[in-house]
Length: 176
Image (tube, rainbow, N blue to C red; front, side, top):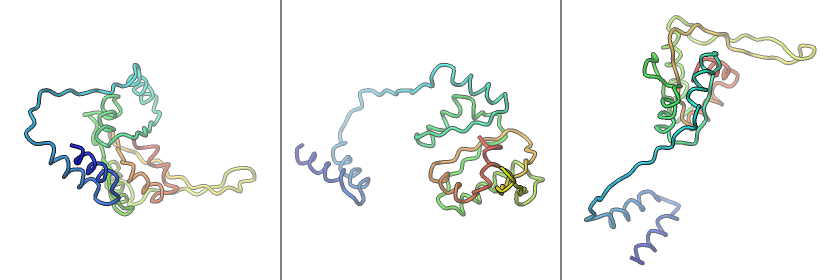
């Protein structure tokens, strides 16, 4: 056992192929075992969270949730607090790895939500601030037919910031 513990430490601190090395070690030790039982722990939302989110949604307040959980867990949280619902027209999952793939997934979602919309959202340029010196760009609202939600994994969200830049307001207003 001491030899295995030492090899486990080496594999666990390896810089390359750590998961593969650990998997191989676990395969060595997990043989001939008999399952005696299992358990699960549910991390429940605090009291009142689903109801509060539902009331905010009814007031047409757009809600964004940022979580460090895995995507599957984040989706389950979304359903448990009624941000994601089975009766929605569609829940879009954005999980691309490159900026171009994210762009395609977002464009596909936009086309489904606004089938009669233009190819690209309309961007309005204006000036604001003291003496109108600050240039601003906003995306015009588009009518969306139905209820939609979007789950964006962290990797794709990073790509979204560089991808849409000033158009982020469109997604904040219309998604999740």
